[in-house]
Length: 616
Image 1 (cartoon, rainbow, N blue to C red):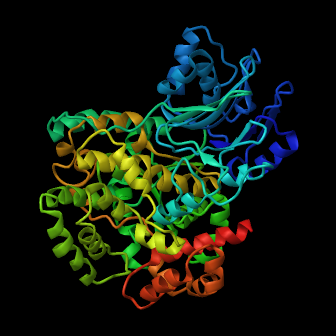
Image 2: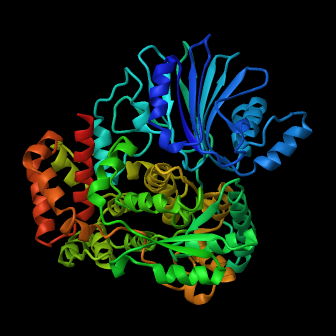
Image 3: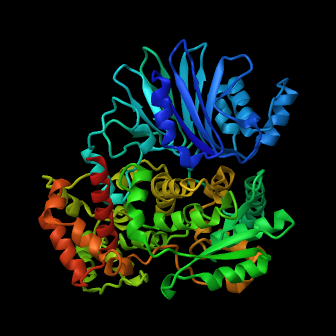
């Protein structure tokens, strides 16, 4: 687990400057290598997790000197791949997964990617062919951004902030990216907030060669198009061995490993499988809150007691305002999900005990756990009612529903469901997962027409007509990598803590996608994962309601962040962002008057202002 940077033509000082900005990702060593013939350079900041010796240092060159690799991530099946490669005649100089990956790529090129189990982003230079290959793991756990250069070359990095140290990039604001940010509270791939910087999408590759056009492609994408309908019990018999193997793979490490435990199904299943595989007490960590509506310490403690873990409670910090600036700097672009601050806190505290932590991210997307999936299935039935009735009778009822800001979302979900009831199903789903609506973005950005929805575009690219398939595929391609995985990586690596996500093992995703949608939701949300959990945990743990891992943002905005709102969201500041003060003032008035809880929208504007001030 590390950070990587590179350029097809930058000198060592530029590479060193880029690498310096990744120092937090790799405190255990830094390496820089340049091909003096071509001018290409690679650099690497190392967090040593597997093979702590100098043999695992990067950039790593092949024995023949033809290939060089800079790699960020972990390959969990590197042991099995090493045995195969040795049988084919390869000799290894280290026990690192990087060397295994390098030898596999040397032999199989892009075909090697399908053999890998793990998370990764890498750059492979072929000196003989003069080609640079960039690639990213299937679901986008590890980030990779790149930029075209004026001389026809390119530069890349693990983080936007590091890439911006390269001279000559177009750092102008991308107006479509700004609209997408207001919709999603993150900028979906392939855009970033800057015109001249792009994200490599999950499951994608990019190839560069001097004098030729850059080529790119997709080597993996999630697919929920299966029609298999065994019983729930039979499905569990198929899934449980895959989950066991995924967790065992994530335990491979030469440094201490723990588990983030919320008390919900996802992390509880992981903790139980960890304890089963480890053969000794595991380390678990839970974040606690003073506000009872957000605190899950009792649920987490019950799981910890059941699995016999060494459990530690870590209190959430109250100083969100002071950490906003550093969070924005780490992302290098606006990122509006305040849960990032909790992961920052949790990672900082857990890093005092472990170097690697397993987390339950992905369980909702893979196993259909979000309440909106239930809403989507209900909306499909509702679409049998003529649109004029839905628009004329149901939608107006939405605005009669009161608002709450205490973390309970039932009323908000009911209002959103009714408000979007007259729309096509794709637009209905977009209305649920986007924050500023198309009409609000049109007003904020002073546009002539409603901007396009990034969510609708992905929905329409799904191959299955079933709404559950489309919702899960859309989330796996947008919300998961652009939001959850983005803040998980950025905030954990800010403290040199590696997060591993066994529920996002591609074998688990592909197995779940082959089951019929009706089976996946036959007993409500997370039918199959809950059935797995019942094999591992007591019923009272499995059936306990889940709160969700969210900060008390509404309370923060009324307390420690109130002064920041007054200072940052003035007419002068808002207009300097290119936004309509009239639209923002109306939003603030609604929020302050208690008519609507716009906490996330207000926070996203604070983030945008902080990013703008850092980049002026």
